[in-house]
Length: 491
Image 1: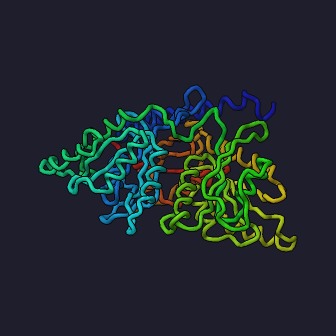
Image 2: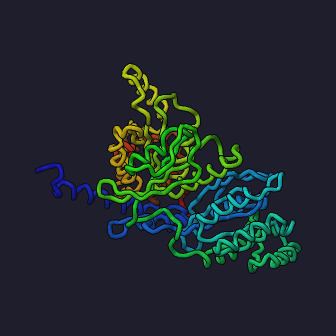
Image 3: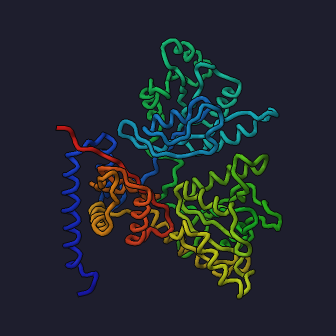
């Protein structure tokens, strides 16, 4: 019999199912909350396909600085993830978190505060507002009820009205009945009923979320999940690494302006192309010069648009100039893709400029530079001549296949059982944390949740991630491993 003989596979599958059922039953002895139960019920396959194949609706939390947006985000997602500090401007980038309320799942976007700069130019406000709103299906507009509506709030209201998106007005910092009268004055903004909320204490957030979910569609009109459409590929990197040249070479036409001057591209350019019989959307982006909040003028707007392009893409090709040493900017671009949860391919461009004597040394440099992302496919190309650009699509397909991959729960728990038996977690305070059960909560990117009797150290979680990659592949996608510590029920 061959290795693929079904007769050899059935016992393994049956053993996996038996193990899964036994471990799942054992969880009944532990304290599980509603979110745990929803995860355990919703993380399974439905008719062989992912249960999360539709794009989740996107709810953006917006407002001027220091009105409590990140505090509200933490309250909604039920944990302290967004950085909160009692001064304006702490949040600078848009960050997306998975959230759930009343049994409905959605994506929650925390945004930086909108304000007019010292010169009185409100173009920066408009730019951030339009990008944040354009990526959302509905908006929670947060206003500080203790201060009332400011001129900046009025400007944002006008932008919200022009967008045509549903808006729910949150009157925050209503910590008691005395402030409710101040909240009622926000009716004057013309956005409908203001919901009095104390994000810090949780007061009124339930009514606010009920209203927000009424405004959200069931399926996002702006999500990245497109089961039947072309896959979206963002070409990103620092200025002058050859992004536009690569797009032109892939398209077979001079579609994008190319110049020796760095920073020629300002706006993302979307182009539909068919490669190997499949449709793809390639997005050329502006070069990322430095951190967004350190840029100004046109560079600032270009960086925002590039961020938006990465968030809307499914896979990013990070171009690196092979003719120069890898820089901190290159590393930051790669980190940006990983933080956005997108699949990743690293392309070393201008390989034709390398002499033969230099290439062996460069290979060693690359191994050191990419030590944290050894899982990402790497292709050496020349956008100018087209050398090896035919290797780009296979690398993209491998990365996207991994990004979409789901491991059956039984097989996942069998894998963890073997892993723990061979390499148990080290003792902590004389006790050894025990892994109770694991499930894959989502794909795009793959996210695994482990239920355990104690905290699993970061080093051990990295070990689990490394072994997951060795066993199942996951080439070209970030994967997330989180742990939920649960205690036995008190009798």
